[in-house]
Amino acid sequence: DVKVTQSSRYLVKRTGEKVFLECVQDMDHENMFWYRQDPGLGLRLIYFSYDVKMKEKGDIPEGYSVSREKKERFSLILESASTNQTSMYLCASGPGQGLQPQHFGDGTRLSIL
Amino acid sequence: AQSVTQLGSHVSVSEGALVLLRCNYSSSVPPYLFWYVQYPNQGLQLLLKYTTGATLVKGINGFEAEFKKSETSFHLTKPSAHMSDAAEYFCAVSDEAGSYQLTFGKGTKLSVIP
Image (cartoon, rainbow over all chains, first blue to last red; front, top):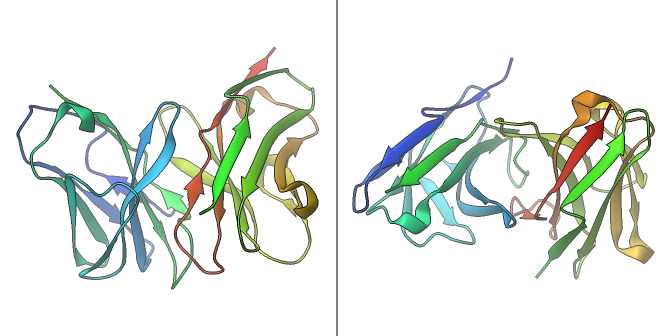
């Protein structure tokens, strides 16, 4: 069974901390994505990566960075967490060049206090 | 820039009744259109997608959607609702062939009443 695995389902951090959200996929997909999901706003793309060490900004990259050192792993980094980054974060993957996300992880619900 | 409007943030239907979830889009070029489903405490799953060709698209779990260019719509339907269909449904559009940038609607939460 194909899987996108996010390292934590729930995470609580403090303002100003550096936060790492990890995502691993086992489908050998080239493309990986990080989305943020907020009630009434749907999903918004933070960053995506189409290859190892390659990344592109999405719609809301401010306050975030990403790392993709290996094909199967895509990390989202909050450099200095703030309360407005409290949200549900979804990782996704998709095959090939120019194809949309097909498989999503179960999400990490992040609370910043 | 493209946009997606899902009419109704909450929809309730009786078990066995028709499910109709509405999605309208705006796009300056022929779009790719998608429906995703999110069950409670889970990530999204791709239900179906329209790229080119036949405008009636069949997906998983008995759902289907029809692309109507003249109405800029891509409504999701299922003839008979099951309790297991209770979830949140998201419509999304990509306005370039082969683009991995999707614009999502705000979602419609479907409740199924026994």
